[in-house]
Length: 469
Image 1 (cartoon, rainbow, N blue to C red):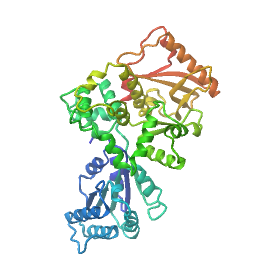
Image 2 (image 1 turned 90 degrees about the horizontal axis):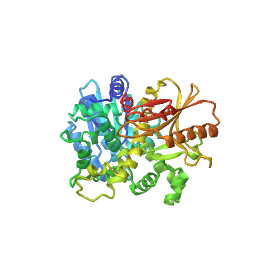
Image 3 (image 1 turned 45 degrees about the vertical axis):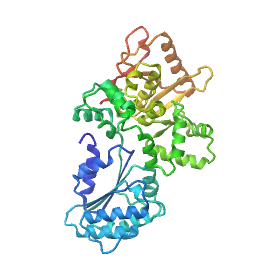
Image 4 (image 1 turned 45 degrees about the horizontal axis):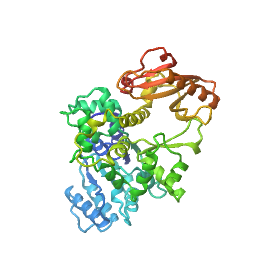
């Protein structure tokens, strides 16, 4: 398996314990949760069931009962409710001859149909019996992180404080993407791997769809724009599968996407005329928990001024390029890579790649062991209009790195105008933040900074190779 070594270790160590274990694995859809669990335990489950999306409670129970029968349970009565279903599961587990009994409930949020008693039955199953069983591991999994958080982690009833291990599964890093491509025989240089990350993020499901016969542009066309593109309807499908009223979530995401640097909560509310402030807070929290947006605190550490920024690469790519593209555009991406619109999008997309690899940037700067807070900054001084920094690393060793994140297909050239802009940014930041720390201009680029009469303004560099560490 590519990556996930720490997650596998945690799963195996937890399942090996004598006492009953309640494990929760969650993360964005397509991130590889099911694959991780199945590979770790080699499908040697006492029982495994995957919730079916979009069906009613009665049909869900019927499918659950069929799966129980497939695993050897001979039901004496029909499972008409979830209490019956978990009683049957208990009987099946009791009959098992396995030393280590592992139960895997995949896409659990989909089992909690409207007006079902699923959560109450799960609470009863765990508290009345399963929690006292030796060598029993219950693994539950779900893409709807908001459901997992609300119904399990913040449960105030029978599941309160019952989880023994939680694993938030993150997208792959660039290094893991490179390894995955290598395993699948897809040969790309690191510049193109970054390009793939800018479109698909670190989601293994998308990356395994690459055809090794083609380069990056052709694969993007084939997956996103061709007549039978497998990801053409992915955007709508993801939101519909995660949220009960996906239109409200999509509306918030699309409002945020209109401002590449992000919007404050009040800015979002004004943009879409959201009448219910409390409901907006809930939607923002759920979108953040599901990995679509990030709350990006300003360097001033004022929560009120926090920016919400779209951070899911594929969502941003869809809204920029796919949403209004006609069907069957076989070569659209190949024709766009030299356009001005591509230049604007690629700058933003590369910023998101960098923000997803802050630990690698810290390592490249030699400060991996230094306490660092990461934030954004935008000048409020009219004397410095437009001065902003996408990534500020405020370090405990009395240095602040103002990181400029620049995408280019060659060495990045600093000219006289940009040199002045960088110096103004540093001066404005030091003045407004009233900091006595040393200000270092740091360039995070693909191929580094071209050495010329202006490049000395830069104190440190992070290059493409560093992001693969």
